[in-house]
Image (tube, rainbow, N blue to C red):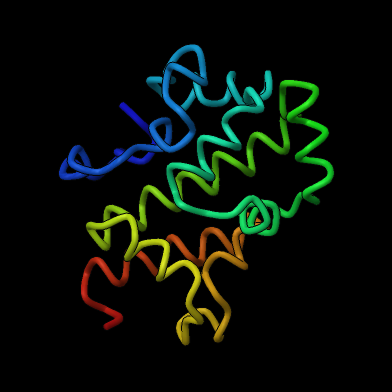
Length: 154
């Protein structure tokens, strides 16, 4: 089971966290549990996961760098080194999880990205994407997505 699928059986029609990060072709093996994700994150994601996420989500690398709170130059260095550090990997997985959840809620990748890039009153006028560089910000975005899914916010 993928992290993004936990507590959401209808998710099968949407892309998963590992799909967004390049799947088995990039990750070498697809994590099937939270503990396998932890192991993969601790070892560091392969650098091509950055390119896969940019391509699959339709985000510019600058958007990804800002969303994960890592300078673009650092990400370029990691690409040359071939692997992200554990904290960088954790942030990239967090971003992919939020994108996967947004796609699930909005039922279309383009609509999900548009929502992530748009100012949101429920988030104090911030764009959801701008809050993903912290755990608390990401929790707020995920909570807002849950509220949208259940009709609390229009």
